[in-house]
Length: 297
Ligand SMILES: Cc1cc2nc3c(=O)[nH]c(=O)nc-3n(C[C@H](O)[C@H](O)[C@H](O)COP(=O)(O)OP(=O)(O)OC[C@H]3O[C@@H](n4cnc5c(N)ncnc54)[C@H](O)[C@@H]3O)c2cc1C
Image (cartoon, rainbow, N blue to C red; front, side, top):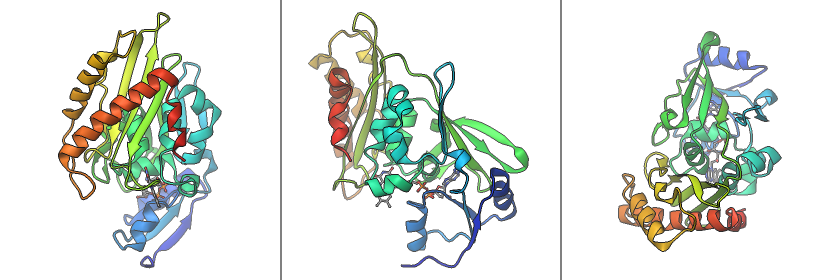
């Protein structure tokens, strides 16, 4: 299908984009177009104006602060998150998650800002950012700006606190503990499809080899990314990953959310998938830094 008619504005600067968004309530930002354009073609959304932010290359960056905080511009493509040396070194979980998004063609266009603003509950990157306790910077009309956590940004199925005249400009991810190891595991109907269930895990270890820090989150499980960090706390202080601890974590995870139901999985399936994927991801992160999920391309 073809989209309904719309006007097109090629943004010249962030200020220019903000001015159009402020003056036109039916305007929508066009980033990678990988979610917006299909929705327009299906006539599920019909913006009067598309504000194309692709020319704003100043929003495509990955930088590292002195304290280890990573800053990612909203226009950073998923493909860059897969392979950027700073992301690989300082935010390995983000790189693992990005490799599970769709196919290389989609990852070459889709952006981190677009994924967060679209807020599909099955999306991998918002879940990874919940695990990493990331924040976002949002620009508003007349130079206004605000900052919020990813957890507070996403409020439901395809729903966020973003106002129509606001633009997400930066994702801020706190420094990770040294030698953090990460893994992402998911199950989907076909390779490259949205996840029926997915799980992100990051672990770090002290000099004695004990797990010092464990965070996790899930996608595809509920209407929102699910924070599973409380579920993995039994790992903290452990020198080895025992079946007993993994069983405790699995039970915690299966009870940690209000599962969605659809033709791919029942609520009970999703509880069991969350538990099984989490155990698999923990084993992968613990033993080899999640390397096995390189298979996801
Ligand atoms: C075949 C296919 C398979 C896919 N599979 C997956 C998958 O497995 N996992 C997954 O996570 N995603 C998947 N996607 C979606 C893809 O990841 C998108 O790239 C992503 O959801 C949206 O990013 P985008 O840059 O393309 O945004 P767009 O499509 O351009 O925009 C999406 C929405 O976000 C808004 N928006 C965009 N940028 C901003 C901003 N900076 N500030 C405020 N609002 C903004 C737009 O106005 C629009 O409402 C798939 C897409 C396709 C076509």
